Image (cartoon, rainbow, N blue to C red; front, side):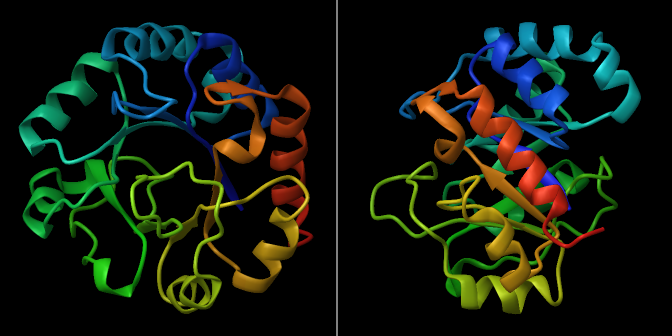
Length: 215
């Protein structure tokens, strides 16, 4: 079971997620998000993470979350910040995903949003086919609402599905057993406040997710 901790805004929280055992660390490069962080800050965090002993041992994926940015800007940001993957969380068309090849995956919120995976070999072993998040009229993630679990189960049977939306330490294990996704993602569910992680919640979430299937 892969675990992504998203909405990281500072090195302390990023190291916490890394040391707790997260496989993907997410940084929101969308200024309107309460968890948004600048490219320069992400670059500093990524550089520090890569020198950490825990990073050298496990090589987690560093993920930039983008909303409706052109592929050239996404590619440039990945290179400048030292990120492995892009999560496209807006209304990006299939051509944008293809243009980024194996360096990106799409966040979807319903069946109508499903795009084919990029087709190129993934640039990192912790790259999903899709991320499924909760549908929300104005937010591009981090709403705290549950995703469509029936749709999630159907997608998880055929794809490397990263499931997000309303997951917390107290519900992640049961959700994993019901859906059996490739991985799970938490942002607001492991926070003390928007943009600030709660250490106990982060550790409990990762532990519960990793133990959910008993393997």
